[in-house]
Every structure is written in structure tokens, then in C-alpha cells.
Image (cartoon, rainbow, N blue to C red; front, side, top):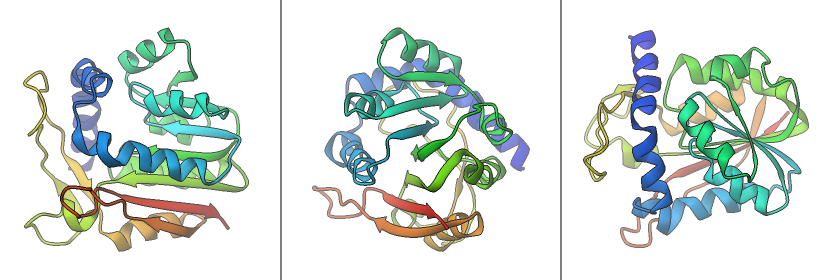
Length: 224
């Protein structure tokens, strides 16, 4: 199923790029507005990294935010509509690239920190990407991931790794064809880092101010 599911993820983002850009620009996603946008910015800023790679940057808000804070940031995404839109705004640097292309050295430069903010949905594509990161990072480089908190995202299903169906529930009717996503437990997220040359320096669990439950999990890894 992996190849089909991985393809569906990319196809879904191609179809929903415009709707997603509108949702972000209009701040329609409550959890991002209340918690997770700030939490990922704080996590990156806390590491004092001069040069940052924003992986799966989407419409580019994080790249622009970090650039405005004085960092040199490259945002990369596989969806041309995202990159084209981001480049027109004139803040930050953006490049079209798939995770496979990043893994095979398309970018041709090194970074002090790589960040993936709610952008690692696949299985094999994510493993391939993470395995390549040590070659893209400087000595003692860092990798930060913000993702759905496994204990919350698991819902009523068994707490086991595997592909899950998704939906656009809570989003506007402009969104179509939700893609599957690959669920990882907390232990598997940690293993993804440690298997590919990183030591987990910190795990953050930002809480939603209204529910009191984790709104996300943030993993901060440092190259060994």
C-alpha cells in the first residue's frame, strides 16, 4: 500500500493547495492560532541556528516568520502552487523539491537546522528523507519535527504504527480528497531520530489552552 498511499498524499496537496493557503492566511485553524504556530517558532528560535531548512514549507508562513527573525531560511515543497505563491511575497527563499530529491542531494547546500512542521505524513518517503539529513546538516546540526501528538491522534484505534484514513472535518468545503497518513507511536518517532544519527535533546508537548490536552508533539534532535 505504501506507494499508492504516498502518491495520494502528494496528489491531495496538489488539489488542496489553494484552499490550504486561504485557511492559513485567514487563520482558520484554531489549534495553530492558539498553540502550534507559536510552539514551532519558539522551538526553532531556542536552538540559535543561523541557517534553516523548512521541509514541506507549504505556503511558507514559517519560512517567512523565521526570516523576519534574522535567520537564513530555505523553504522547500513538492507543490508548485505553494512555491509560486511564496516566491511572489518576496520574503524568504523557496525551492521546489520532493523529499526524494532532497534525499538525493538536489539542494546542494548545508544547514544548521532542519524543521518539519506538520509535514511528515508518509512512511517510506519520511524514512528516506530523515536518513539523508545528516549529509545536509552541519556538525552538531539539528532536526525539529512538530506533529500530531500520537496519544491524541490515535483516537479509538489500536496504538500501533500504520496507515490511517483522514478527513477534512472542521475545514471549509473547498477541501477535497483527504489523503491517508502514516501513524507513528511516540517510541517510533524517537526511533526514527535515533536510527538515523540523532540524539533526542528534548520532547515538547504544547497544551491546547481550551482542552488541556497536547495539541502536538515536538521532537528536537541533535546530530551525534
